[in-house]
Image 1: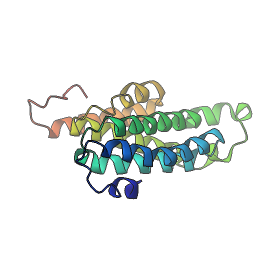
Image 2: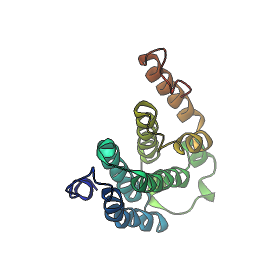
Image 3: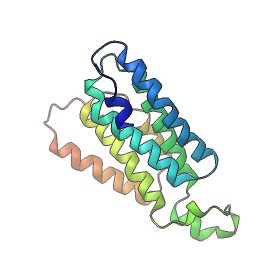
Image 4: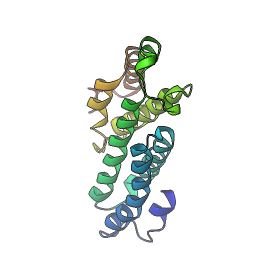
Length: 171
């Protein structure tokens, strides 16, 4: 993903965003295929990797709305990955009702996805680009009670570091 973005000679050219989005699209398609075949951890790695590359270079891309669409696909995919792996409470209460998918039982798998989602949420809030706003309601809907506590604590900690007039204070 990083190479797809950096391969564009002039990221400030108005056509660059379309070129970058076209280069990222097949990479995100791979993540979609992993997710479709219940290979949640590989899907997470690809979605997160693409999102990280976009976050690292988003301010360098002129007319970035095309790239924002690919970023949105990563957010949607990460939220689907999070939903695919139930929290520990569900795993312990209903073990016989769960599919036989090894990714469900990998220790820390859900936390890996949750941390990737939080990274995007906090980047969006701090950078103020408003391209990751779909992450907020998605996380609020799909987190476990324990994750909710972690998420709220992370939001509070980051907001305390911001100036009083910080425009995204609602996070």
